[in-house]
Length: 158
Image (cartoon, rainbow, N blue to C red):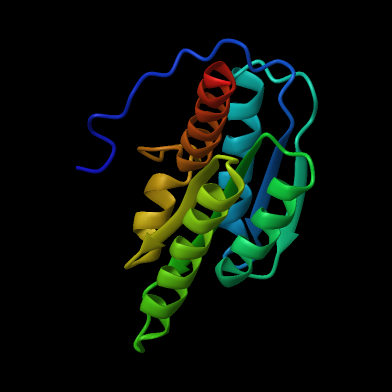
């Protein structure tokens, strides 16, 4: 089952971080829940400042917005969205482009990017991971916590 083996993160030293969140607008019921989870994750990490939230049309646009946030003052970026499998190869192309793009942003800028892009076969899988009441997982919260924990770790290495 997905979610097994997830770390329990105790994040210290995140108070002064600047966090950006980029969230796709497709499947708004899911992406709004992911955003709620990410905002909760930022608060739970002890970040004082409200995160900068940017909405983009879809998953394909996440990397360019994440790059902008990473190169304009954010210490950590959280990327949120949902791509549902359809009847054409579009799913594979969008998932690959978004995944590779977000990974490239983190590696080239040195700013951690929390991966909160759900890539699901059916809507029920997305609901189960969205952090909505009754869901098994909260991928928005997890992505925010991962990005912030990594930012804190990277700061300690300087």
